[in-house]
Amino acid sequence: MKLHYLNWLANIAVLLALGATINLAVAAPDSKIQKFWMTHDETSTTEVSHQAWQEILDKYLDAEHASGVNRFDYAAVKKSDRRLLNDYLDALQAIDPHLLSRAEQLAYWINFYNALTVRVVLEEYPIESIRSIRFLTSPFGPWDKNLVKVKNQDLSLNDIEHEILRPIWQDPRIHFAVNCASIGCPNLIDKAFSAANSDELMEAASLDFINHSRGVEIRGGKVTLSSIFDWYGDDFGVNESEIMAYIRRYRHVSGETHNITSVEYQYDWKLNRP
Image 1 (cartoon, rainbow, N blue to C red):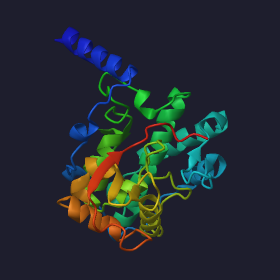
Image 2: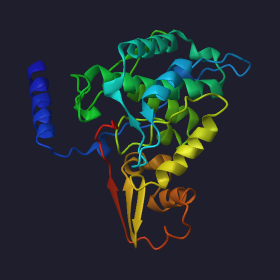
Image 3: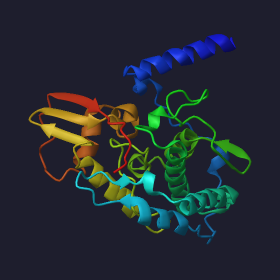
Image 4: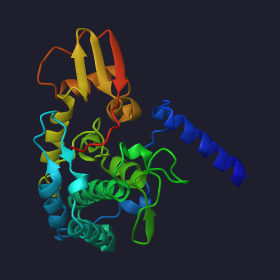
């Protein structure tokens, strides 16, 4: 059985190396709540410090790139700041999120996901795409590998996004807040999330992505959408019409999403480096 599994992985690696397109829409994880993470304390006044993450963003994230895609300078990260990032992630793992308010939890998990993604890339850099980081348990990228432990629970990036963030908050703007280190992804935001600013940052991120060509591009009756709207379409509506209605809420140009004749999807997996 082990030999067959390794042969399967080897075949997948060959396909990816040859540039074969694998239908990730089929494999996109469902939103599946884990009741263990539902506990919270609305009487809590605890505020988690994300200052270390903010320092890293301030040093290495270019939020004014001409392309409109924020770029993280992985190559420039100093050893001292790698230690700072590791210490920050260790500190997050030591926190009991059950003792936090729901708003504090939201910021905690979003920052956790984004900082952890940056560390995953840094550990393998230089690479062309985060999808080139593969493990036996996660052959299509790093998302299914257990990377951290919180309250004695092993967690992967997919666990954080699809078993905690998406099902608990049920807010489609989550997709514009978490970053997968790719050009096609919504921007890595230059501010650490907090209980006070999360709603504002998610709203701004939604506006930014949906009005950028990698999120939504409309030419005549043809619309090209980010594959996020395909992979996680149920989060935005029950059908294409409802997805377009959601998009319409954020588009700056009114009326352009009417009379659509065709819809296509695209995603650029190149690394969000300078």
